[in-house]
Length: 108
Length: 136
Image (cartoon, rainbow over all chains, first blue to last red; front, side, top):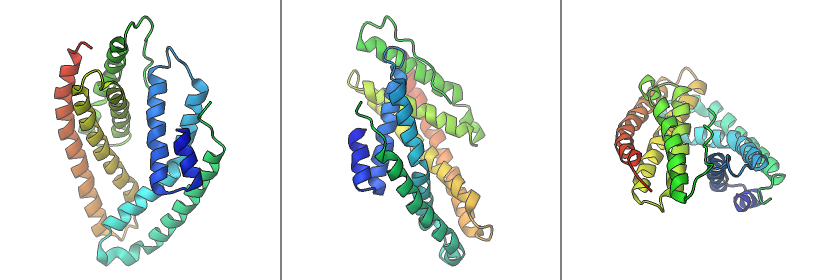
């Protein structure tokens, strides 16, 4: 998780964001499964926070790709304001995720 | 939806741990499976999250029994389909009303995603029966 975080904050690409999120989900699942005998509440909280920090970036990217792939040619012009809004949101949300993950740590 | 706490006290082997974890996560999935028939969020979301927890547990223990990998694979596909359906729902809520053709296309794809998830759940259910009677 720490390696994934570092890679993302160095170069915040869509793929690296995906790796942060999937790695976080797996770690969270493990922590929840063994929480009874090996509680790591603080780490679990940080992992959940990291997921929340990346939600908006992920959502904007996914919805944008979906719109690009599904808009019919006759309606492309109508979709242009939505395209612009989603692109702006994607950039801003990725920047925000990067800023928040820069301060996170998962190796302790 | 919060995951159930798993009582691991007294577990003597990895097999014991696997059995308790899988039983708990499987019961969560089964309790929510009815949401598939309703085809709506947030029920589908809760079911998807429960599937995800079960899938990760199956993947974690697949070294104990390679048959767990098959169930994990089907759950991954089911989860993908429900995720795709949800992404379409999100886009449909912000799509300009005048984009009727795109809207119909997205709605039809969304329903196809849920149909595939229902089909995959049928497969997973069969595989889970084998896990129920499994001894690690």
